[in-house]
Length: 402
Ligand code: QZP
Image (tube, rainbow, N blue to C red; front, side):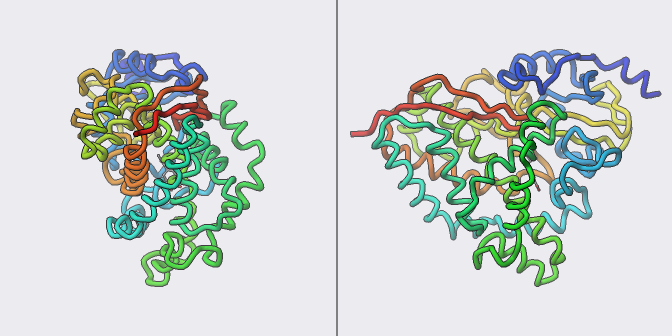
């Protein structure tokens, strides 16, 4: 079968998933793509879309067919120079992937969670206590941003000074996975000082002893990676570990302000706190989409995708696919979230997810002790990004317990 014939066979959409309209409210597009078929050709970009859970979940697990080595953005590294030097854990396949992934996994381990849990909880309590006292605050700028920028940046081991560069940096990287639209160009408009600062924080001399960052260099000392690779893995922590959890935490507060009955459910049964975050990120996935590249011609439920093609995986759409989830647009802490793909699936599944969960549990736990209910206190303001879904502003008011 030729490429031309296969293109004719898949339904075609002229939609732009990265338009302001679709970034503001992606769910009608997701439904249309799912309903169009198991694979849809996005003619505007010359890429293929998978939007149903039945296709997204197994595609994520099939790294041989759906490669990351050509980049997980719309850019094909074999045809264009990558916007940034590629990640040696994200933008790579086995066997190269496995050595660096092993180092990351050992650093971000359960043992590390045990070591840091108390610190993360103390910081969450301090922050939430002040906010509960105030009663009205911005869940983004007063809570979801400062918390990871304190606890996770401390854990990585970078100095406090200059941390205001971290979110602008991840805003660049997460926009760079999409097309060269306004969001990308605005994000990189003043990139140079930000990139210089980030590069500087990846050096051994600035990283606190015992920190995640320092441990990358210790892994190099043991010969698990090269000395040149250690700073690149520190960069991965700084890129992937902040803005993702910022949006996850903001989306969690938004969920409980939107579904106040679910906060009552959680208050009645705090043991649901672990599952609560999974359900929130199923419902409003911080990482909405990313790409893979086919290594061979592949048949997806009767439709062929040629070799060497970019495939856009709609994680957020799979997470709300009514073929997979009952009443998918509702937050329901009692549902089983098994199979949700907000952290991905397969060998690239989020390596930092234990820490994302720890942060969410610490914040929700601190809120459970002090907050009876959340309500929106103004119009939320979205922050549009080619990959991330979240807010620039989220005004909320809380009713304090007792
Ligand atoms: C970003 C890196 C959802 C992912 C695309 C998040 C991500 C993971 C890893 C890196 C960056 O290694 O730089």
